[in-house]
Length: 203
Image 1 (spheres, rainbow, N blue to C red):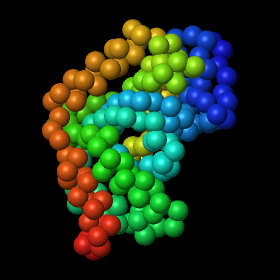
Image 2 (tube, one colour; image 1 turned 135 degrees about the horizontal axis):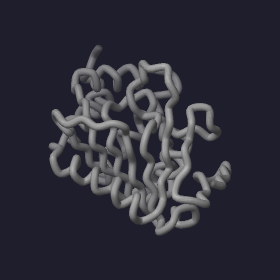
Image 3 (cartoon, rainbow, N blue to C red; image 1 turned 90 degrees about the vertical axis):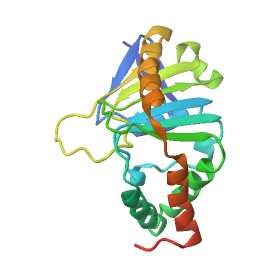
């Protein structure tokens, strides 16, 4: 399978998919960022998110019209502490501002999956601009996305970049099942970011 990486775009596929290893350049998180920056809709299923790993700039999210996130593990107290820490860490404060703005824009939706768990994390992205790299302008990433909790294991971290209407639809169906069974936590998450902005939360 042929694959080409460019600094201005995600992997160019000449087959049904490619695998990104932990030593690949660009890495999975960079590829995810490039894909999101060109997607109109994004659906993310992440078992446990790590706030410090989210470093999107405004331009990365400017095209996104709808972003749905399902979280497997959610702890509001831990989120409050993570937001406070990130907001007071050099280099991270601006990222918190970007996330806060995006959460308040009406384009983000977040649900908790409750007791449901899955492995690995996955994402589905769609948009006309993605058609340059992926058939039908749709792509799925399955595996390590670089946004979850730090993996305690020492083995390889792999991410599969999948194109093709059939395989992408399969991943999307799994997301819809989690989404349909989840419950809305956008208000709780938004409040955590609002508390930090207003200085009401103290660690």
